[in-house]
Length: 130
Image (tube, rainbow, N blue to C red; front, side, top):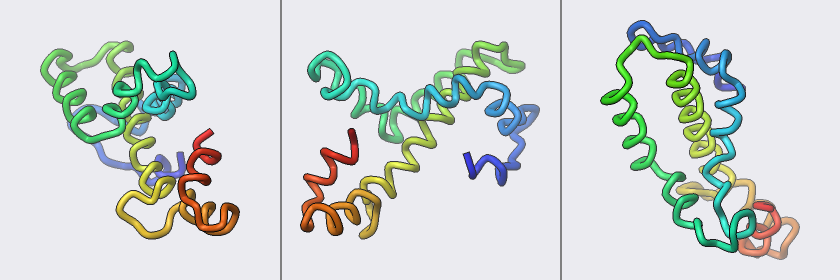
C-alpha cells in the first residue's frame, strides 16, 4: 500500500494508481491469492502447484500478455478489476522477497529464525507462514 502513494506512471490512457484505488477489493484479493492453494490452507495440497506457479514472473507475464491480447482498451469494470487483482499478485511477489529472504541475506523469516528459533529458518518458516 505504501508504494501506491509514490506510484505515478501513466501508461497511455490508464491511470493505474486510480485503477488500484478504485478496485481495492480486487487488489486485496490478489495480494493473498498466491498463497491460497497451499496444502495447509486448501484441499490437503491437491492444488499446491497453482500456488507455486502464481508466485513467479512467468505467471504474471502470461497474465499481462493475455489481457493485452484479449481485452482492448478502454477497459470495462471487470477488466479493470482483473488488472487490479494482478497488481495485488505483483505486490505479493515483491513482499515475498523480504519475507522469505529470496536472493537477500536478511529477511523476516531468516531473522525470526535467528532470534526466536535458535537459528532454524525451517521452524520460523512453518510458524511465520501460518
